[in-house]
Image 1 (cartoon, rainbow, N blue to C red):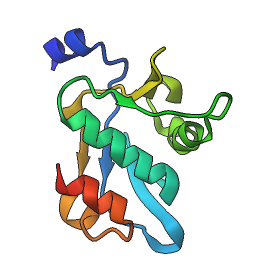
Image 2 (cartoon, helix red, strand yellow):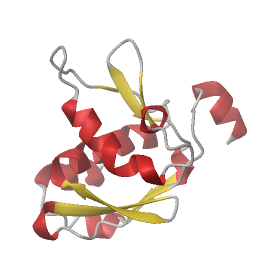
Image 3 (tube, rainbow, N blue to C red):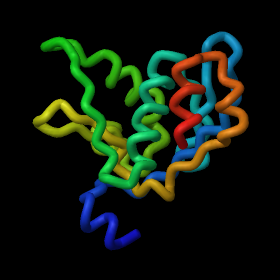
Length: 133
């Protein structure tokens, strides 16, 4: 892990688990550093996209085009988890660079998920992303 931290310059050591539960009322459970957090479907889909990119092992950068001045989708993803982060800094955990790329800035081994539960998710996009993991 240390060589990956040096190579990819991850900023955080937070752990995250996606159990694939809590889909009632369009809410999804995420466990960040042992704390369960509820996340709405929209930000959850973006989170799964970022996890899929992180698991590829190439630094985890995902290109997301947003209209100038409109970063709500990223903010909606960061907000629910920031209180559970070790440094309470969601902008470090969901990092972005000058090229409009975003990533989860922790080691891929610290991010886990329940594949079987996520394959039963009500969102087709989520199921499609999980199939490739």
